[in-house]
Image (tube, rainbow, N blue to C red; front, side):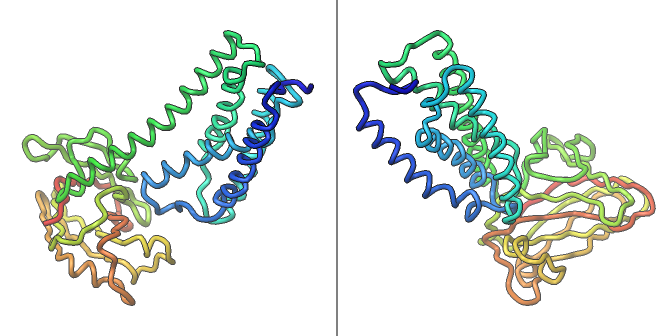
Length: 316
């Protein structure tokens, strides 16, 4: 009998191996085709990433590496092979217009480690040790951590969609899950009981921030309202950019999005923009108001660094 064989269960083990193998073959193509792209929403991306754990658990059941190795050699060999294979997969995915994600390497390992760790506890023919129980507990904690991350993302997105008509909750301490660019949460110039976002603009060709995680369905509203505070004595011009998912997945042409110049006088500046104007901004098509993907504020070729404060951003 080979190392790690399970006495008394050959037919059941073979059926499980066959089922795992067939299922793996059905899942493998999705590593390269389909699924989320760089413009997909956070929940979709997070849930899809859990598929790495399932796939590599199934592949481990199919290959059954414990037939040849045991103990630390089994763990070392599987970990080394999966890290090498994972790097190759990430590079190939990058060539198919998919994003590289180093965290996927850990998810691959979690799927395989779960099977290796839990197998000795499920079959009576395997000797159970304190080490095997500890490894099973450790891999389970890793799995629960990944599931908790997805649940946290889903909860955050649910809460975010309930904040409408506001497009951003200025009470948040950390804007990075929602915005990209040089900005920080601030108390300065904010309405009483609220906060502002300080946007730091540099002297590069284009300097600004982008809101990429917000309620995307703007149907049923008539106006976009935003308020900015210019703390300097000199006026400042910034551009408001808005686009939908189709624009992100296309060639990002200037004429395929909404661009609007905001001239900021010293102090408080409030702008109200009809959503109908935004919808009709692309030259060749109406903007999809059910899938607005990105809202940006940027300046162009400033002679010196400036700052501006965003005080409010909402639909009416």
